[in-house]
Length: 309
Image (cartoon, rainbow, N blue to C red; front, side, top):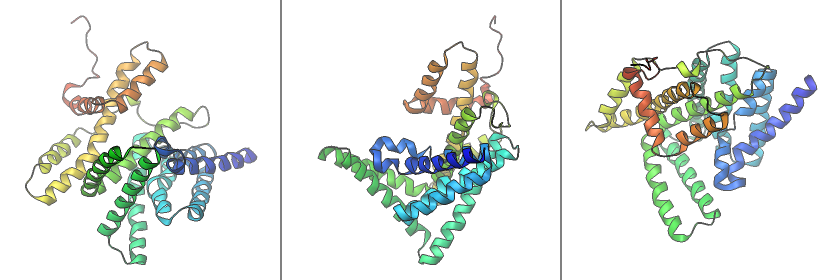
């Protein structure tokens, strides 16, 4: 068992590097691999113990420091590395999966604040300047990917406009987007851990088909919507940051409603998988699913209904 754990840890380090640097090696299609970056450390932590996950994160960090820039290392630790250890730690404590994802996201956010504060102290930089630098690096990397993909000049100009507009939105809602990104990464990792668990470990918590957010959270969503319309910029920024965190949560609740519905249908697993993928990527379906999650509070789509009227 020990030799097997060592072998899989080595494989996990390689897979983590592949997922993290896939966008540089594979172009735009490699961007999807980024979301899988924390899976190896989280899975090994669940199956063999947290020590194996720590080895993956530490060795990956050392290799990144040799292969790439300090910026890439910090981005890995803040978005993927820390959470890939906190999530299995919470799960191994038998905490429900939804609380585990929340605690892992909040813990990663707090440790990110500490790490970034240390970087600012050492470099003498300020936080707004660092955020602008991070956004600029991402814009340059995105444009380089488009250029390497063989886009024509007119297409590159159009993508430049879109990327700059997106950069402006990211600058305005950076804090909310970062927390939302942590939540999405933890949620995806949870789904994959569930699919890979076999008989190696168990996940505690409610059945996803019956999962729902606290009812009182809807008032925070409503307040954020009104704040977005306020004439005061601080309130607008607050509302924008709250919305980019809350809307993905209500999308997850909408997906729970869909999961509840599909469980009652005799569709083959492949068909159900295609439905989930389409709901994720095909506009305007994600918006519809999010709306279902919001109005589930009042309509309760999962309430058993008398089919005979």
